[in-house]
Length: 166
Image (cartoon, rainbow, N blue to C red; front, side):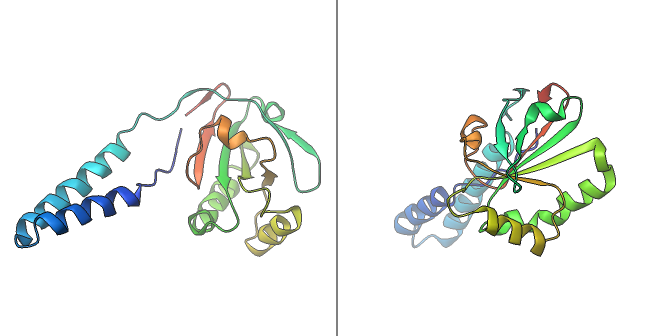
């Protein structure tokens, strides 16, 4: 599984505030301690055990109102892209997904799943797809699929082979 990991910035800010108060006079010590904390936070994020295992089945509607099931793509590699139209990093990754789509064609299925169905209406998602030249399937998460995949930040990407999440 490939999963984008975002560091909880509030933890970093909390650590920085503590050291600004306690060690105001020792700038070098503060700098060293901050680098250690930031490094430790990055290390924790990098070495977290990714979720692997059998993919959770789901059924969601595409932008044409047609029900799409994960089972529809049995035997293919599937990239699940949990995203939202208002998410800047989600927009940043679109060219990378486009390259995958162009390079692998029908061998890899990309399913972008909007985690915010209240804001991301069908009309808004159609405009988004048109604006960014998205040619793969976009789904609205009206069944809380993101919760079933333990998505806590976006964008989050899962790669599913014939049987398992990687």
